[in-house]
Length: 238
Image 1: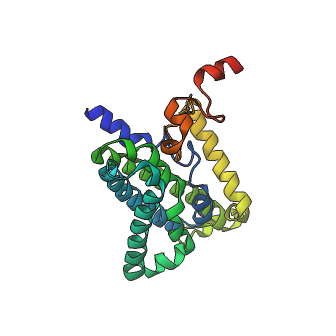
Image 2 (image 1 turned 30 degrees about the vertical axis):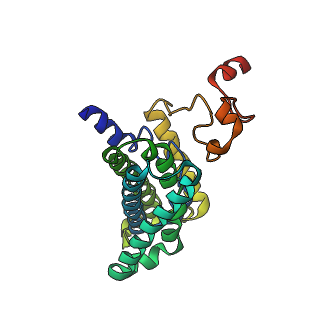
Image 3 (image 1 turned 135 degrees about the horizontal axis):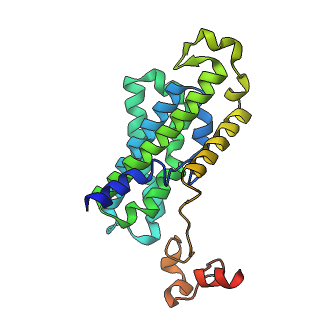
């Protein structure tokens, strides 16, 4: 039991890292990693929303109807994001101004909605909280590493503090969009090497995850949709 919970907690750090393996949340990842302070702030804000929304959705999973679960998840997530925004605006206004519109965009962050649909909707409150913590830590660490590379080597500073001996060697392109994509690609490649390319693969695509499954006549009769692809059909196609 303990080993299973530890696996849930640590999956998001490397093996199923939401950014470098699942490739989710790339917009804030590229946008806020020009500075270490903004990257860590975004990571912690997302972690708080992820844990709270996971727990709330897990607690309400037997109450929320399948037909409206996606809108319900978004409403819950938006509530937690609003709470985080208000707290930052009240107590950390500089961080609030620094993150700007990307703070509000946590509502549509694919990591949060993805974990709600793929994990919290099917597991207990405790396990969902652990999943949220693990995924949040993985997201925050990724942002920190990217921001460290881009700020230190691109701007010759650390958390806004200048590093004089790096000034002659800094690479300003790292703080631009192309530099962000370059660092992002390098980190994805490194994680692929570390994990030997053992990324989680979905072998079948059925009606279970479809928001319209409850009202779909094919899903009720067990007939796969035109877009559904089973493991057997994949083998036959090969």
